[in-house]
Image (cartoon, rainbow, N blue to C red):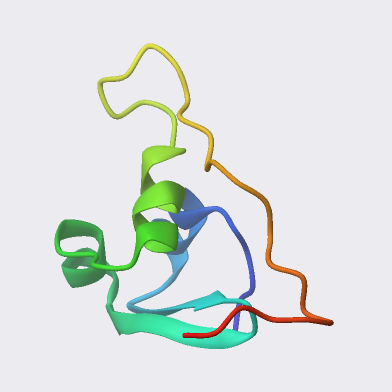
Length: 74
């Protein structure tokens, strides 16, 4: 198990990945499948924040983490 927000590192060290958001797994699968076909907005945000993918600037993930003392529904 390797825990990180850096999917660039995951691409180099893992074959399978699980993406967690607000304490729950929101996506899982083979690294390359997830990179090519991510569906969750948080996963896409992590991927868009990687440098060197033909972008001049990093794209931050908008918003703020959910309040886990009063978690959102859904």
